[in-house]
Image 1 (cartoon, rainbow, N blue to C red):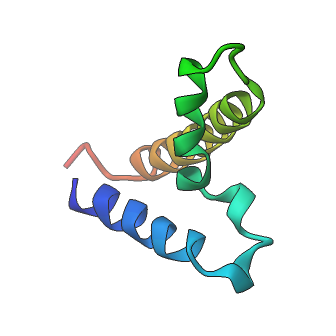
Image 2: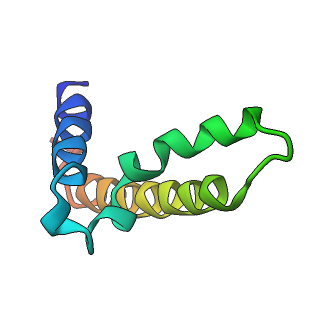
Image 3: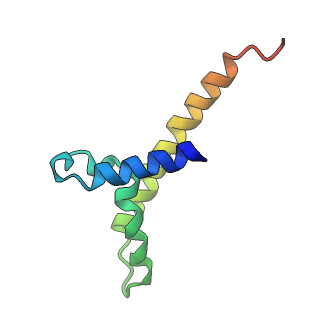
Length: 77
C-alpha cells in the first residue's frame, strides 16, 4: 500500500512539472480528474475513455510483471 501511494505521489509531482509535458498523457493521475465529466450534461467521455485505456495498460503490464516474478520464484522449498 505504501508503494502504491508513493507511485501515485510521484506521478502527481511529475504531472505538475510543465517541462515534462510529453510525459503527462502517460501518467495515470493526469486522467483522474476527467471522471468529473460524468456529471456534465452532455457527458464528455473522451478523457474518461483515454484514462480507462491507460489504466488497463498499466494493469496488464504490472500483472504480467507480477506473474513473471511469481513463476520464477522457488516456492517448492
